[in-house]
Length: 84
Image (cartoon, rainbow, N blue to C red; front, side, top):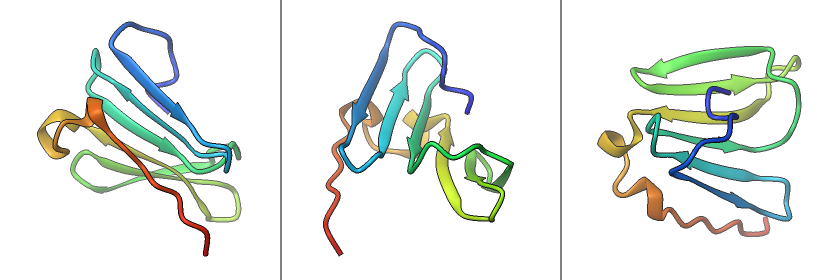
């Protein structure tokens, strides 16, 4: 994922379920990792929206490029993970 390096302007939220959400204001990328499986393939499903897949074809991550233009206030993101 392009937002894995350390830089200022970054906000990361880790969840006990293994999810991680990260917004890096320096590169304006919002990344959500669903699990730590190796990314085997990535597809840009719409301009600036990228899904990452593992070897079995499962979605393991999501990236939103130019996030401040596509998501309302990505630096103040909040997520809720509900049990099924």
